[in-house]
Length: 152
Ligand SMILES: [Zn+2]
Image 1: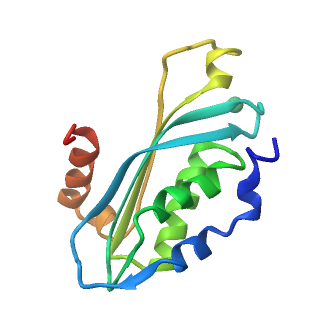
Image 2 (image 1 turned 180 degrees about the vertical axis):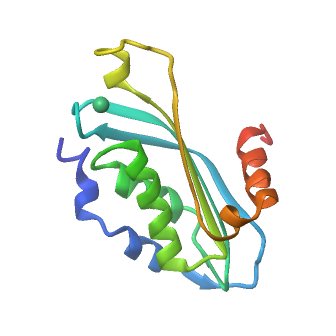
């Protein structure tokens, strides 16, 4: 349980600050299919799935591995998927001040699979957008297309 909640001891903003680099890259950066393991705070049961994170730099890029690290720092706490999504995006927006950021999480919740409504195959999707992802439909569509397609 201590391992699963180690995120309380981590400072996600510091994780990003530790690897921020000045750079002129102005296009979308997407890290997709990040495995997420978290714990539902209502039922103390796992929920798990994938997170997809994007941002458009505004003078600074971050080390790519830091985005999954930030996701883990928030996921390894007692959570709800909705708050996990907004905590990740707020951290990215507040720390590196990008032109915009996007986070989509799709997850299966054991509290829905093995108790209550007993649905084994339902997937919950949450999303959050800031800046240009919020204002510009085409930017958001490009991100959704990238995370939906199999490029690799
Ligand atoms: Zn639950």
